[in-house]
Amino acid sequence: MNHQENSSQDNLTEIIEFVLLGFADMPHLQWFLFGLFLIIYIIILMSNGTIFLITKMDPALQNPMYFFLANFSFLEVCYVSATLPRMLMNLGAQRRRISLGACAAQMCFSLIFGATECFLLAVMVYDRYVAICNPLNYPVVMNHRVCIQLVTGSWTIGIPVQIGQTYQVFSLPFCGPNQIHHFFCDIPPILKLACGDTFVNEMLVYTVAVLFVMVPFLLILGSYSKIISIILKLPSAKSQAKAFSTCSSHLMVVILFFGSAIITYLRPNTRHSEGTDKMLSLFYTILTPMFNPMIYSLRNKDVIMALRKLLCQ
Image (cartoon, rainbow, N blue to C red; front, side, top):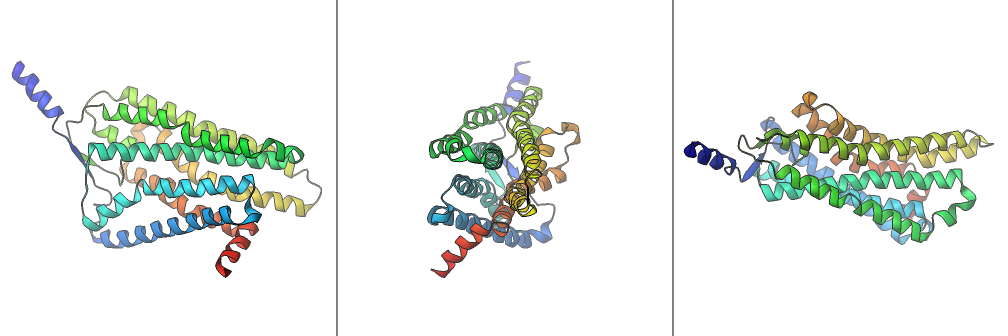
């Protein structure tokens, strides 16, 4: 009996690292994918960095809307940097092994940045809500102090929860296969490798997803329903078009990000498939940060003007 207990304990301590399989099932495309994702990473860094720079330098962009956009662009750089460099190393150097500590750190940072994005998107729609539904009081309601508080809250509110969730996941015993069928350490593929009962962890994932993803998403939808009703009451078609233009870019970002995140974390566990998980994760961790600057800049005359000024200097 003691021998069985000892061997079972030995098995529980066997796994000291994971293997991120990523796109190992497509060996003939490894270098193509490396080049593709490297280009995407450079585009994300340059485009989001440019938006951050012009919103800080251009006097015409010194208002709450662009203050939030600057924070959002900086967040996108942080978010994608939590996953893409490791994926590029796996594709280029074929070094797929990752220690438990590095895996936990990657998961924790990606969860924190993901939660921050949920809240920051909600803050940005609140800004548009006040600007359109209560324009006379906008300078008072969205003063500099309030903007700082909203951004600080968005960045910090998820930190203790996501650290606790990561700790709970990595407190589970891992004694079986150590291959993660994903390109980064995300909760669903990690829980599949745990030997113990993961019911509590799965319920925690659903609870956090509802609080950090669904609640902001529903608040955003509620705000947009009010915004649209106000816009439709505007007297001129030109005023309606201008109001819709300022909101439509943000709405596109919301649909891209929240749609893929909700499907990933809130669908039943039995319906999780490795290929679908990877595709959905590509949307909210990589493709959305790449499209965001294009959506905001191409649909925003002020940003285009500021960009032209920067290029002409």
